Length: 152
Ligand code: HEM
Image 1 (cartoon, helix red, strand yellow):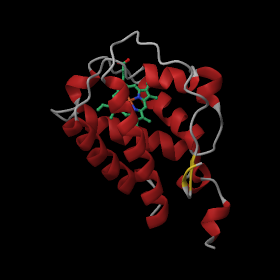
Image 2 (spheres, protein in one colour; image 1 turned 60 degrees about the horizontal axis):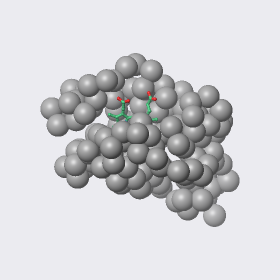
Image 3 (tube, protein in one colour; image 1 turned 60 degrees about the vertical axis):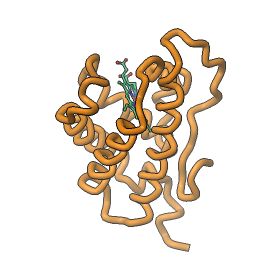
């Protein structure tokens, strides 16, 4: 079994600092993209930090998104009403895959698992985005965890 499997994905990507860089590089590209920029009209710099904190928790780092930012329910609610198209989801994936290649360690399995998380997560964001703002999402359960074997 490779040594990397004994660490969390959070540790393997390089922790909070690496996730902040990933998020920053990604949103820089998003805001310059003609297909995605219109979806992010209400973007603020806090978004970069919130996404990094979310990813840290998903990859088994500190559980700060749950403690401070409303947890899984708030994450899903943020996407209500955005009406994300498949074309937009694919562009999001393209830009995130490029950001992963630029900012994360040169480790093929690590990068594959991270990109697989984004593929899974963007499908959920797209599904949720088809519902109107204010839709009752119920209790979605705890923040999902993604590891070396995918969804935990
Ligand atoms: C794994 C996939 C995704 C993750 C982890 C994610 C994460 C997040 C987080 C943490 C927030 C809250 C930010 C804050 O509170 O400042 C957020 C909001 C948002 N997300 Fe995502 N997101 C994903 C997919 C997508 C996709 C595919 C799109 C559109 C193509 C999208 C568009 C947005 C927008 C526009 C907002 C801000 C909504 C507002 O203006 O209040 N997200 N996302």
